[in-house]
Length: 122
Image 1 (cartoon, rainbow, N blue to C red):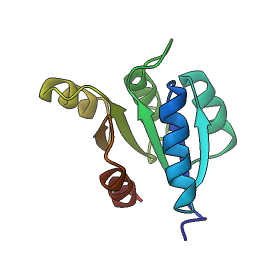
Image 2 (image 1 turned 90 degrees about the vertical axis):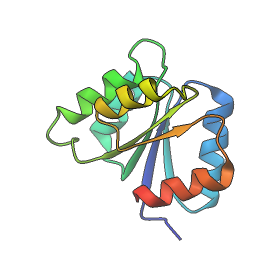
Image 3 (image 1 turned 45 degrees about the vertical axis):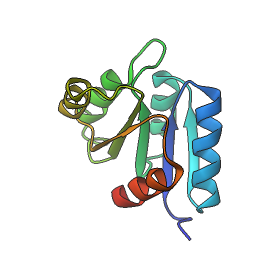
Image 4 (image 1 turned 135 degrees about the horizontal axis):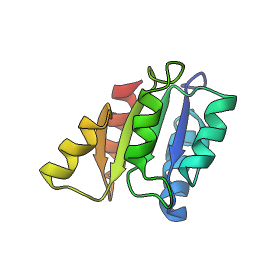
């Protein structure tokens, strides 16, 4: 099992959040969740996850701004961050990767490939 691995999901869509959380917990991961960037930073003050799944479009502070802040914080910069977005245009993906993402998963997700992607980053 993957009990020692913690994943922080930052997602404002409740349906997606529950889906991702259920999938990952079923695979044995410890999951923390945040609906906003501010909630994510509160969690990061308490615990450093092994992986962050970051929705790109969030209310208030968007996902790419959060990633840039994580990358500029020495104690957090090492965390792998994978973007989640319905944007599939090459330019959107390139901009997201340039912001500091380690990977990019498009929504809606394929359940099998989603789990394979997660394992790749852990």
